[in-house]
Image: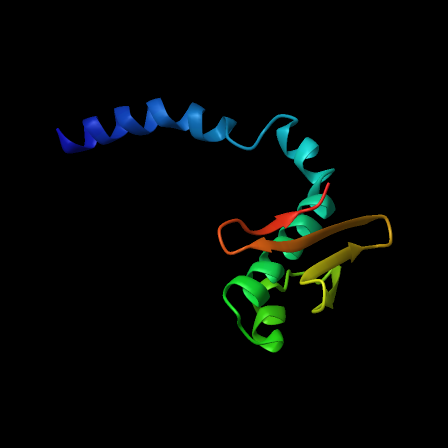
Length: 106
C-alpha cells in the first residue's frame, strides 16, 4: 500500500517539478543580475555601516557577492555608499534617519 501511494504522489508531482525552471523567466532575471547586485550591495552596506554601526571590514565581508563584480565606495561624511559593476551598472544608497535607515537613490 505504501509503495502505491508513494508511486501515485511521485507521478503527480513529477510533471510539476520538471516544469519548475523551464521557460523564459530565468532569462529575464539574468538581464537584471548586475542591477540587483549593485542595488542590494549599496543598500546592505549602507545599513551595515550606518544603521548597525559595524566596522567597514565586517560590512565589506557581509555584502561580498560571488563572483565579486561590484566595487564599493563609502562616503562617511554624507553617510552614503555607492556601488558599480563593469562601469555600466551602479547604485547609491544613503542614510536617511533613524526611522527609515538607508534608502536607495533613484
